Image (cartoon, rainbow, N blue to C red; front, side, top):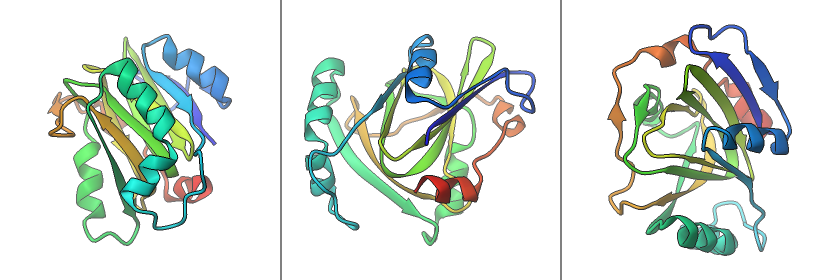
Length: 188
């Protein structure tokens, strides 16, 4: 289940507010320009399904977003706790960064933690199976998949080159909660 905590950018210990329903989370994130949706597959997806099978199961929503936002490419990324480069991959995303395009992720399975730094606040969002997040271009954020990652995600891009980050150099991400492996298992 999705979970949103909002902190002051100066205090990563005590949330100012907590939200647990999709409607509340979507409303709060919408106020800072972040898209948050729930999607349902149009057909069952078998474990180990190919990228094409996963994309086809969500084709209607993918096509809608591509029309609405001008995204030009889509792919599927998957990571599990037994991946030999999981620690290096995790580290790559843990520092605050921005993108010149929206960062759009839909969680087909598993979970991940997106943390956004907007207008003096930190929005810590645990995304789970069925959640789509659209982080607007230029938004400061970081992503955690935990030490034991488990997720399958659809990614949409306007830039066919894919994920390109500009790191801010701010150490803020180190002062806020990380995703715990138990959280991954609870949302798988």
